[in-house]
Length: 117
Image (cartoon, rainbow, N blue to C red; front, side, top):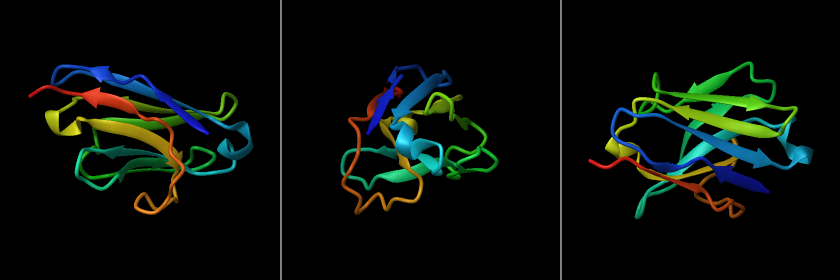
């Protein structure tokens, strides 16, 4: 189970930090990812991090602005979002990094991020 939090409304250029509390049984041994979805579009992976936090990857659209991190002791995943743009407006979800976002059915409620244009 994933519980995302930290979303909100922020002006362009601002910052937000998202958090995701995950089940201890799955968190520390799995690569984790942040996904986002806007109405009418497919959910997409925007950032991922290896189980021991030794490796991170980012979608081109967020590279250089977003930073993913994790605290295995707290079973918590983070996404620091800087330089936010209107096109970052979406519902953000966390999950195992290797799930197929088009097929996987087990998602949390997500957290809404809104950057007005």
